[in-house]
Image (cartoon, rainbow, N blue to C red; front, side, top):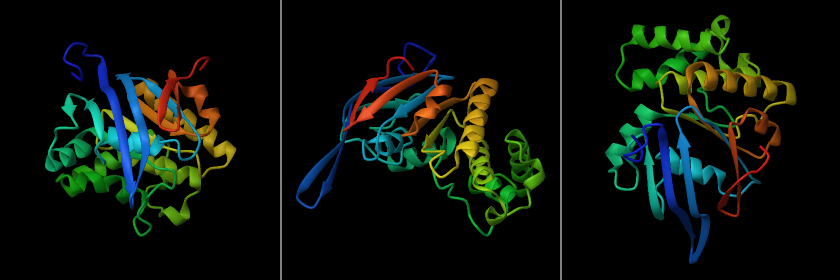
Length: 234
C-alpha cells in the first residue's frame, strides 16, 4: 500500500519539488507539491504550457527524480530507489501515453503493442496474443497489421493506449493525450480512456491544457508556475 495505512491510496506525494539547472540559473518546475491519488481515480491536471505538468508526470513515473520531498507510488519509495529499482518500477507499474504517440514507424500496430512485453522477457507468441487482446480492448482488432503511417491520429493514439495497457500497469500517465488530435478524435480518445478507467478500475492521471478533458475527471487540479491546487467546480 502506498502510505502504509490506507490500501486504497496508490500515490502519495508530500513537499515535492523539482529544480532544473540551466547554466548558472535555477528553474523551479515544481514547488511544494502535495498530492494523494486513490486507486481507480481519473485525475485531470490542467495548466498552461510550461506550468510543470510534464515534470510532475516524469516524477510520478520514475523517469526523473525530485529535488526535494517524498514520493511513493504503489508502495515504492521513488526518492530512495536505486536506478535499477526505478527501471523495474517503470516496467511493472507505469503505462505512458504521450501527445505524439511515440510509435515505431516500421512496426505494425500489433508489434508496437507487443514490444514492451518482449522487452520484459515474455515469449513472442504470448506477447502477440496479449497485444492482440489489448488492441481489441481499444477497438482496433481489425487494424493489427497496419503501420502508424496507415493509421489516423486517433487510431495511433489508440495503439499507444493499448501499448500502455499491455503491461497491466497500476496507473496510466497521459501527457497531453489529445494535443495532436482534431476535436472529434479527441472526444473519442477521451471516451475511450474514461471507459477503460471505469471498466477496468484503472487509475488515470492526465495532464493537459485542454479543458474539455475535465468532463471525464473524477477529480481535477490546476498546476500553474509549479504550484498545484484543487480545481473547484470540476
